[in-house]
Image (cartoon, rainbow over all chains, first blue to last red; front, side):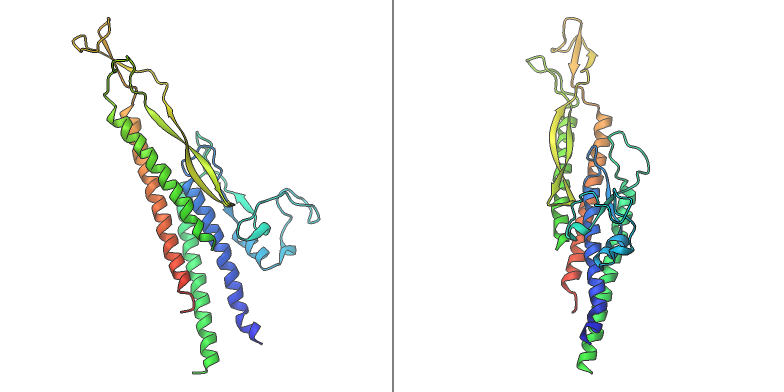
Length: 138
Length: 134
């Protein structure tokens, strides 16, 4: 019975972890905006959220594979563990130093991700308040 | 908390950009320097950035790998009355290009500002996370 109350918080908690991870990836891109040869990374929120919820089967084959039963290429995950997969951003215009960071794009992504992180936080907060008032019955 | 490493990443970028700004300052300061007693002029310096992995694939910081001296030819100015003039009357100045250095300076300061803003946003988010459930 109680798990029904906390299920929604659990969902948003997982979303918060994926958002934090993406925030970190975008911060790394902004930090390396002037590093020659750096390839900008990004994290597909939808895919990583599906993995965090344990619904991997619904996903298309992983990077480097063409079939679900292939063993995917080794990828180093961050806080999300080996399940998280980082992709590479599509370069908008070529650069002389082979750096693929588009700073305007990254700044937009950073603000977008920060707002979504905050909204997830508010969902958690309001849900916790709802449960507390239900428990107290006041 | 994975977001704490953002401070390490952006901090390394800020330190690298401030080193770049330092190099630009010394280049601009020596833009008009002539050859010293050893006959060598000041060579323009440039920093070379390199990515540093910080724990996981998601966190990538920056460091200055090298400070290189430019191979551009020195600027020769005809001034026979100058004490440092050679036999043909030319004075060798440093090979610093002030326009390039100003552009470099603006680029470094913009990158610095970007990273400061990233740290501010992260701090706000972390503080709000601390207040969760209150």
